[in-house]
Image 1 (spheres, helix red, strand yellow):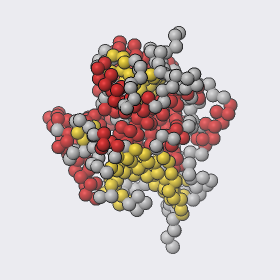
Image 2 (image 1 turned 120 degrees about the horizontal axis):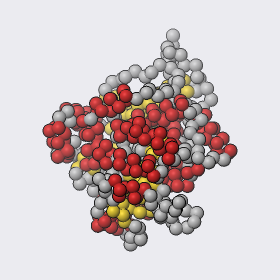
Image 3 (image 1 turned 90 degrees about the vertical axis):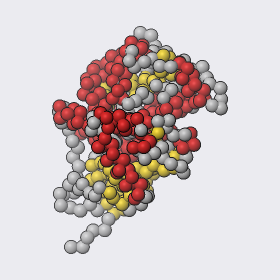
Image 4 (image 1 turned 135 degrees about the vertical axis):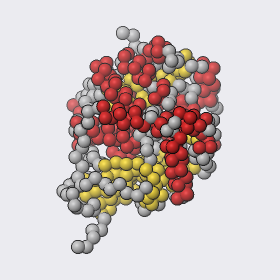
Length: 450
């Protein structure tokens, strides 16, 4: 069997997010034998747009000689052909419920590894249901949510969990996401379209989950957390916050289910003894907890505006005409947060994110049902603009881990980023590329006097 021509191919490279992935990938292209990324190609429907993307990504330097491949998701043969030419596909073609499955199917069939930036729970869980067993058989890793959805949440949760040392144990870890900018926060239409279609088809996700066997759940000390108020003011972050219906919570829960079924993680294809010990040690210090995500802002008015947008999407997406209205006039119905032409470069450059992880738990592991939580640990993940800059950094670093560490990764399967990349050096790589992990505080809570 001939060796693949390329280390990876970026599919939909000329899309809004794809061009940032190309720019990030160029930083690590190195033809030396020791480099994990010696060659890559761009793929899409329009060669002219691919060429323009390459020029934009290489600026101010002249564009390097990167192959531009024509492929169309509506043409399965063209996607199959891509998969036979590379070790790995980086799929940036969303919404994934519309365009993702043919790519996953081709990768699974050919044994080509697959990463994407999907944050759509239905697509992620549907791919697991339909392709996991075949992917294991063919040695194909299929890992969705390898962008801002949901690597910061996964690694941030693990990072907080591992601060609970000795007999201490978390009961719940709550993430508070703050998107910050000197200018107005603006996102691309594709993100809005994915969200609208997700809400419009929420019943399909419910049906999918009901049709599947219930997975194992981890043992978590103490009682499940209370539901809490709709709008919360969090003292640790000084943010007003409301629950964020993103993929992060479901992806983290899938990782925890995998750990409940495989307490030492998933074995690699060809691990050495010391690598097995490293993986086992890593997961043995991981302590499960209930997890949820909220989006926060210092302004209560801004949070109320988010709630209004959520209600508008929830109401209009119930009908095909309402969905059409939302997708035709995104700027109006999102109060200007989403635009068809996306954010400007200045708006992207001025944005950043902070994701706080507030863990509540016990100073020892004998948390009974009626016992009060007596310990709190706060950690934080922060970095550049989330949707395009951080996403491209994360996706490319995930790809470099796959290319350089393939023998210690699972043989195949439809898996989460956390269960695959947790024991690797992905966190270190991200810290070397603008994404920081910090411990903010650890302290015991004063007990109420009886």
